[in-house]
Image (tube, rainbow, N blue to C red; front, top):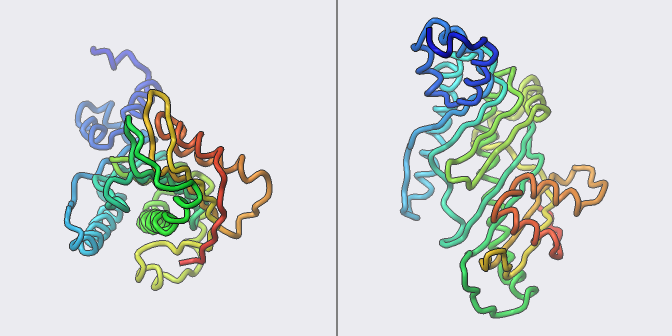
Amino acid sequence: MDGFDRLPDPLILQIFDLVSDTKTLIRCLAVSKRFNSLVPHTDSLVLTVDALISSDSDEEDDVVSNLLTSALRFILKSLHSLILRCFHRVKRLAIDLPFRRPQAREGTLLKWTAEFGKTLRTCVILGFRSVGEAPAPLNAGAESDFAGGLKVRVVWTISALIAASARHYLLKEVVREQSGLECLVLRDREGEGTVVMEKEGLRECREEGEVVVDEEEELDRCRTRVPSVRMRMRHVPRLELKGGLWVEGATLVVVRPSCDGGGGDMAVEDGELALRAFGDGLYGEVVHKLLKARSYLLEMNSF
């Protein structure tokens, strides 16, 4: 008799939930008859997708992007039949991708977190040009710097929204097949982009599948349509952080559908969303400082 034989089934299931790695749990199926009967009842899974394709060539970016989209679609469509069929009651699923979209600009850090239901609910985007111990010289005032870089920051926002809506589109089949899911996360391992679907959003997505939608239009775009949105943008040319670090060109964008009610204190809502997405470590400190800065409201039509 080994140590596991002395443990009750509920405790072993808690251990499996903490392990969560799908490949490890599938290997556990072969350990013993008891493990084989318990592993399928694990309700928290992390699926790590192995490397697919990478390219450092800008000229090949469009081709590589299409190949990545096709490969990811194949993987997600196979997910239910090849992997998730081993588990009976998955409630929380995280999928880690091995790649990320190319940065909007060399040397720029760009991170985003988007929440979806049947369509976009919110998206929080954090970007900055550089971070270091010595500040770069300032060429102009804050207003001039914001106006000069506004086009670039709008491009960041559009790029993040397109990437998020493409990932959401690819997740729809998983959502419909896995009726017990309560939380679904799709992220890349380098942490640039994250798509989140919580319980209410998953319910919305399943209900959408029961009505007639323009599937042909979505197939042409290979992404979910982004609704008309309001974008609350904050920008600071330079921020000094704890420990003597300096962040250059810091920008925070909070995106919501235009049809969202808009009631309440928008500043408080922005803070809650931004800190929920990037509330820890260096990113959290940058967000805290940016939330104190002046905000600019922009609007964008559906695309």
